[in-house]
Length: 226
Image 1 (cartoon, rainbow, N blue to C red):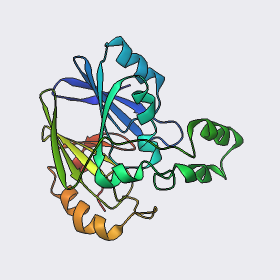
Image 2 (tube, rainbow, N blue to C red):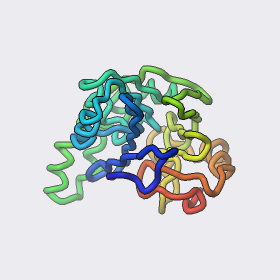
Image 3 (cartoon, one colour):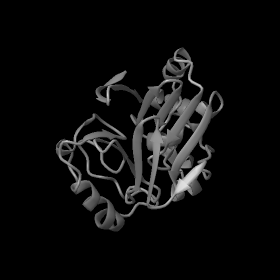
Image 4 (cartoon, rainbow, N blue to C red):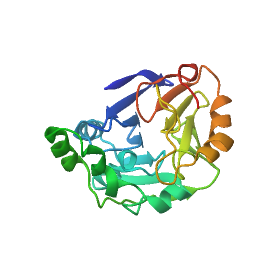
């Protein structure tokens, strides 16, 4: 599906992971693709093939399995370069730290159909690799688009937000629609969120477009911070 928002007239393709409903975002400029939080998706694969994509840049908003589960899928098919925070880089290699080892526990009380689907989707020994890790802030360009990655701990140690052209922000699970940020998962920290991430989010322009890790996109004013 295509998001109702574009970035400088560039379409933003959005793919929702089944069951967990995490968002993958994909942009295409020329023969390059830019993916945030990939999951395995054959519709996205067909889109890249139809555009003759040669290179893929992947950014990870954090290290949790539902936001990294497509890294290896895309690496097998394209020349990929993966970016994330230093903490994310350290933790994606360990199934216990990226939480893939525990995802099935979420479905113990679900229906048989949901449990069977989860078994197909989730790999309890999943690990992947981040090529470039950073601390604090990192800036890159995707074609002519300026991209700033900023550490925003709280939901997880490796969480970041990604600002494109100072008007659009991809927040992962540091800011999602309809819910307060979750800090109770292993490695989460309400203290770090309140000291570092919450002030950062509160200072964003209210008309900045937010692309969250779960849920619908919208203006920053539409999202509850806390």
